[in-house]
Length: 148
Image (cartoon, rainbow, N blue to C red; front, side, top):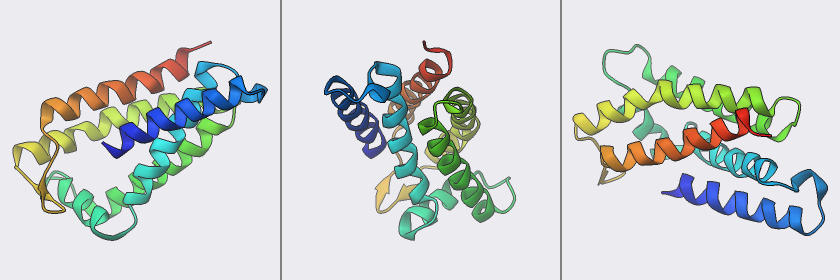
């Protein structure tokens, strides 16, 4: 739920900043870029520290090699994508890349749900709820990629 909150709050604050006179954020697409960048920064940090990293490694489907390396690589991609969202010249391609990354990583969520993993003492997000969240996140990336 924290990534959704980061997306919503980041977008809202950026939009309010745009309405207050900061021209670079004057519009929903620039504000959405900030919100999505905040969300990916939040999720990327989890790839590198503490229990969250351990949980993400556990979510990697067992048939894939080097889950620790895959988690590190996806964390780096999320950080690079978040930075790319904040640069107008690269925002569209960064959003498209992040959208594709989310689609590529979704099977790990399915695998974790099917294996009934417990992460940080709690069951993984139910698949229906996780799917709905992914739709929102991918839609945000798509809006940035193809928006005005």
